[in-house]
Image (cartoon, rainbow, N blue to C red; front, side):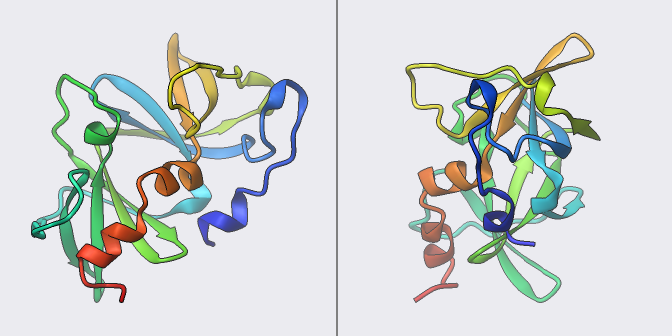
Length: 167
């Protein structure tokens, strides 16, 4: 299933899109917890050996060949300007409209079901349209990401172009 298949939004009370209901993968970036809809995840892998590509955007750590496909990998800690221990330990492979893409994350925690009623709306004047909301889990706030908006803001087609995967 492609990311675009699951991000059709319907405005619900508090402006929370319809997408924010279901199973979400919880992972760490630096010391912060994030969640993405599990439907967009193809697979999880341990550390991957990346080849850097000259001229690629700063947030693209490199590419790797996995299962016969060359996949660009995005460093979310760099995208979000997070400090602290940002050493990626896990690769999250996504299905996108352009093809598979990797996100570099810290530790993977779990897959949990998030109910719409548990999502706290997030309104901020800064550039945070990629955040769908927040949810409290085990006394910790977890940021729920909208992958479509996030990838669009990164102009993720550039990841594929610099890797020679698009014309």
